[in-house]
Image (cartoon, rainbow, N blue to C red):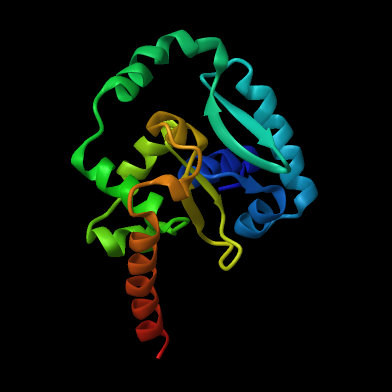
Length: 183
């Protein structure tokens, strides 16, 4: 079976769900970056008539919904934004606010439970944001957003109740775990 590079790129971007560079895609599919860039251009052209399009930002690529069909997804998104935060969402955002930025693994360690869907919900609501992890390019760090601060009516994270006390305690717990794993 011959490889349709455009379809392979689409599959990789769909499954990964996160932005990828053309260089990273080339490594994953073991192809030359020039071939990958050609496949990305083809994927971009095909997307003009589809519900899923190729998004480009700062040299990275990701799949997203076609803005021409936004009216069909508004109700779905609106429901997620208007529902009250669940107990797990409140717990997760508190951990991020008082300890962040944190990796998903660190959040899950503190919570003791998988947090993928909770993080997705908080990201979609704009209450947290995801940034590159300078210590590990394979993971992201999660931190609270400006919208979170606006929502709570605080000017800076340090204005949260007992911030310094909780920040210190959370760091000690996670540092103990990290040190134990390294030895």
